[in-house]
Image (tube, rainbow, N blue to C red; front, side):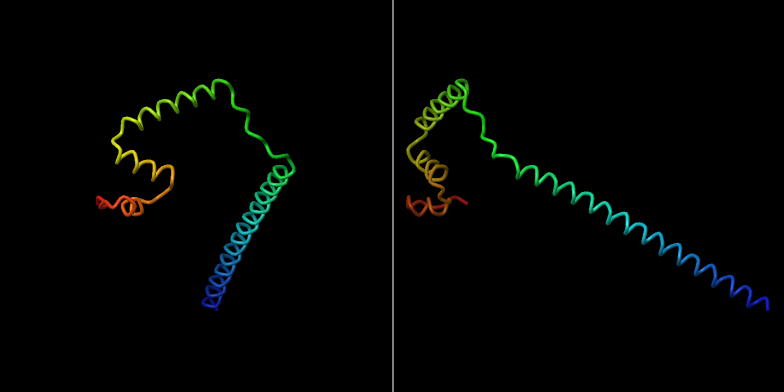
Length: 114
């Protein structure tokens, strides 16, 4: 009789532990699902607000911006003029034309430095 009580107590304890574990697991899943829904709703609201607004234009260039841009262009032109012809050509082909190093080497008939 004592064995049956001990077995019954162990079984009851195991079942209680399993139920507690399962309920904790379900609570965590429910919590995570609720968080996901809240985050999704927030993102949806932000997206709707963004789409409903007219496209923002960047501010017009100020006189200072134009002056800085033309000053930069002068410095860039001066620096390019100081480069040897081959280096200037390689730089312009890469930066302005978008060629790869291999393409530039083929165009100029020079080996690729590796």
